[in-house]
Every structure is written in C-alpha cells, then in structure tokens.
Length: 444
Ligand code: SAJ
Image (cartoon, rainbow, N blue to C red; front, side):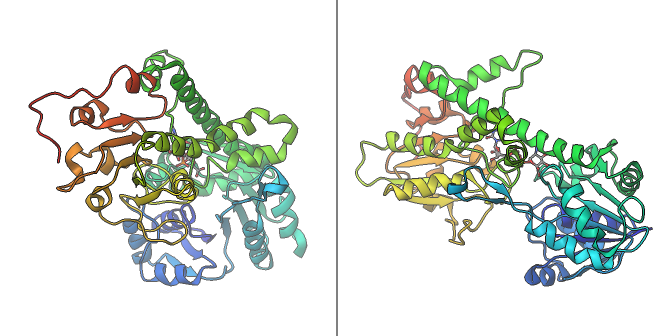
C-alpha cells in the first residue's frame, strides 16, 4: 500500500482521502484551517454530502487516516485545494487565483524524494501542472519525470452524489510524461471503477474545463430560450420538453443563474488562457450572470401593485438538495431585491446561514406567513413537495408564486387561487389565468 498525503480537505479532498484510507492506504489528510482539522479529528464533517460522515468514520476507525495541519513525507502527494477567481471589475474578465495551489506545492517541495508521485486534482488553468507546479517542485534539484512523477487528475463528481461518482465516474489522468500518467492511474484503480484514460497534463486540465464550460454554455442557451419564450408568449418548459424528444437534442433547464464553485468559475479559466478565442464562452457567462437581475425584475413586476410588499425567498443553496450557498444566484437575487428596497425573508431547506454569515429563516410557515409573494429560487425537494396550503393558518397575504425552477405543479397552485409565474412562462401566465374551481377547499 502507498502512503498518501492529501492537501486540502474540502468537497473533493476529504472524500478522496477517506476513500484511499478505506482501501488500505496510509493517508495523511492536511488542511490549513485549524478549526477544520480539529473538527475532523472529532469526526465532525463540515460538508453536507450523503454518506460522507460514515465514510470518514470508517476511514478514521481503520486507523489509516490521520488529519494534520502540515504535510509529511509520503510516497504520493495529492493537491486538492480551492482554485477560486480573482474578481476585479476594473480588470475585465476574472482571473484564476492559484495562491492555494502555490502554497500547497511550496509545502510539498522540501519533502519530495526520488520515486514520489505528485498529483494536482484542483481544477486549474491549462498549463498549471507543467508551468506552475513542476518548476516549484524542481527547485530542490529533483527533476519531474526523471526523479519523481507528476500528473493532473481532476474529479468530475456531482455534489450530492460525490461518494457514488468518485467510484463510478471515468477519470482523465494527464501526466508530464507517460510514466507519470500511468502511476497516477494505477493509484486511482484502488477505488475507481470507471474507465481511467491517459493523456498529457495540459490536455487533462483543459478537458476538465471543457466539461464545465460545455454545461455553462448550455445552461445559458436554456436561459436565453426562456427569454425568447417570454417574448413570444409560449411556455419554455413545454417547448424544451418537446424539443428534447429529438434523439440528439438535450436542452437544459432555465433557472435564476449559475452557482457553485465550478460551472460559474471554470469557463473563466479558458477565457483567461485564450482571451481572443472565447467570445461564445464570455457571452454565455454574461447571459447566466444576468439571470438574478432578471428574476428580481420578474418579482418586482408581480408585486408592483402592492405597497411595501414582503417577499419570501425559498432556496439560498446554489442547487437542489445541497447546503452549499457559495456563489449562489439565489443570494444575488435576494441582494438585488433588498438593494431595491424590498423586504425579503430568505429561507433554505438545508443551509442555515447565508454566505455573509447572516442566519436564514428557520421555519417555512413563518417565512411564508403574511408574505405577498413567494419566489422559489432553489428546487429543493422540500419546495417541490410544497402544497398550496403550506403557508399555514395565517397564510400569505397575497397568493403569488414566482417559480424560477419550474419545480411546482403550477396548475394545482392556480386551483388554490395562486397566481403562478416563472421564467419563460409566456403562455402559462397569459393564456391560462388561474382558474377558480368552486368546491376546492381554500388553502388557508
Ligand atoms: N443549472 C441550471 N440549469 C440546468 C443545470 C444546472 O440552471 O439545467 C444550475 C444549477 O442550479 C447550479 C449550476 O447550474 O446553480 C451548477 O449546477 P450543476 O449541477 O450543473 O453543477 P455542479 O457545479 O454541482 O457540478 C458540476 C458538474 N459538472 C458537469 O456537470 C459538467 C460536476 O460533474 C463537476 O464535477 C462539478 O461541476 C465540479 O466540481 O467541477
């Protein structure tokens, strides 16, 4: 078995370190956050991810996982630290921020010995492994390829399914030479059941970015189709469902914007690497980044006839059934509405705090009680399963729903005399006014 040092115990590093430990490797999990280190040593997991708690327990109980604040000599080093963006509006496009990658590489360099393997897992701009990590590791005289192996291998797991996809997904491994790729691939075979494909490091880095950029551009297309549907007065959800019956069409879903620390971030790594070749990618980013303001405009239109309306915003996480509020478009929508003077109560089914640390509403009934409009921003299961009478005994003051994820059955809510609006719902709002059917019990 191999002694592995994993640097960065976040969404990817912690599951990976635990997975290697349960497979019998000796693993030192390293993080620079002392609170995180002590929490993990107590077996407390800071990430809401199905199965992760149990995996960490079994990894710790196996005696193969030790959590430390600094790296130690090992046979293999895996760098899984964050690679955020540096956003300076005056600078134009956001730039990749590699400070954590550089810090982790600097921490490893003095420990490096002949025969070691170093793998960069962090999503990184093309060329990071070869032009940033490699020279830093070679400062002590060892040569990558000759004395130690160096590879790149990003994960492609879907938050909410991390433990499943860590095992089942195919992996792309890129080496600075074929031996490095092979050695890294061999290490992952200890738990990866998917296909492991080899290439060079820069190609592997670019492939990861292409995957997420592909998704961002296609989400932008769905969002633009919803604008077209509003303009034409047709229902975009119906149109997309029909179009996706074509054997080679798979249009994604409109929403309030693109969140998370990947899809909204990674395209900028490609733009940064090839600024003159990436007009489409930039435009798609602009389309998606314009969605929160578009949702705020829709909310404003729906409550335009009400003095000092109160808005109940449901869902602060960036996507369904996760508690991650980082880079969430929901947070942008709430911020914009509040900047415009609206009273907004922000609730989330899973997250307890907004990114700025403010507490979110804890009780849905209280959040909805007396509100003039409810805007669903994240399609958590709790919200999908909402019933029109969910607003509790006092109920909402006005029965208006803005469903930005098209995740509730609008016709059922209309039967309870709710006016239902959503993105690209042209016809649903215009041709199909809420029908009042006598005999249906009033929801509140
Ligand atoms: N979204 C839409 N409409 C859609 C799909 C998504 O508005 O049809 C929004 C979501 O609400 C969310 C954002 O896009 O705000 C991103 O969600 P996501 O589920 O597309 O992606 P992530 O960030 O949770 O995970 C992605 C995945 N990449 C791809 O699907 C190509 C995952 O496989 C990656 O491993 C992950 O990024 C990552 O860490 O890179």
